[in-house]
Image (cartoon, rainbow, N blue to C red; front, side, top):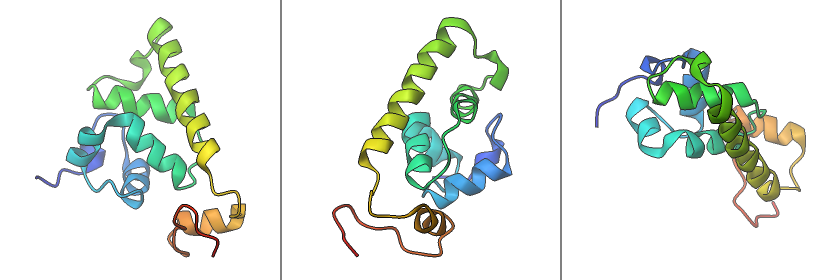
Amino acid sequence: MSDTPISSIRNLGPATQSALIRAGIPNAEALRAIGADAAYTRLLQMGTRPHFIGYYVMVMGLQGRPWNDCKGAEKIALRARFDALKANVDSTKDKGRSDLEAALQFFGVVERRQPGSTS
């Protein structure tokens, strides 16, 4: 496997690259292998605030298309996928973790809790 930077993918810059690396996606090859939905789900699980444009920019980039190429029915379908991803992550969130703890975990200050863990 090569080690091509995520930022080499159209539309994806250094900030997205850093966030994806923190979410366990180290390079462009890994991102292409798991796809936009799984990658964005990981970002949400890490505490990234959901943003539809960020999601569809990633989808378009993985297709080699400019971010603003998403229109009409395609954009409506992507919105439905985004909403489903968001709802799925919201339903599995650790309700015992405070927003502060989640932010600290996102930045790597505290360890990620394992599902079902109470500590």
